[in-house]
View 1 (cartoon, rainbow, N blue to C red):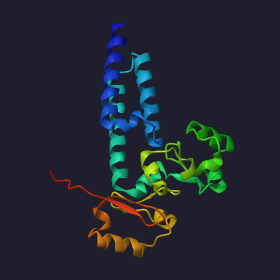
View 2 (cartoon, rainbow, N blue to C red):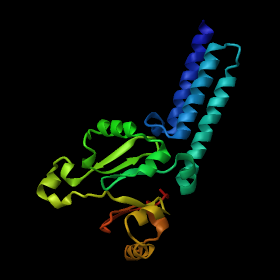
View 3 (tube, rainbow, N blue to C red):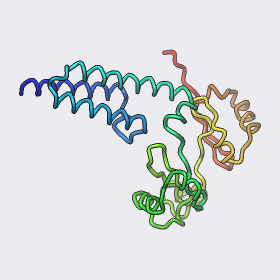
Length: 227
């Protein structure tokens, strides 16, 4: 009994340390790779606790290996947009300007019941109030309401025109251009090059750039990695 007790405590603390190393994101909504890691770690931990014939290192080593693989994969996806797309996929809009994209819903195997359920969870009961709805890479639905359906805030109360019918899109993420977002905003590469030249920046020097179809943009420069 004491052996099981101490094995359980050791494995518990090993998993806690591994989760902390992998980052707080693991404790929220899980990406596909994170979900797989969570299942594997839980299975390894369960087997090692139930079967005392399995050496403790037979549980600790695989858990640490999985943690290391996840950290390395996270680093790769952070530096490579293509790798991130392969591992986590891309957010997909299933409602644009109030119109349901039935093709995207079929690709995601998202039913009408799924859509209406997610809208209700977001506090939306009339689909006509929705300007954009995007299925995130973790499967959650993000909803952006039309200006007339958005809650009143001090900003919109003082300036009703401040409400936007179309939310800004991410054009550059950590130095990587999103060509699709540029197209969605009806903007050209030439326009982007002109903006970057005006700001005296290159794509690689941009940490985040967002823009809406009205060409109103916001740029966050990369901070120096040197202390």
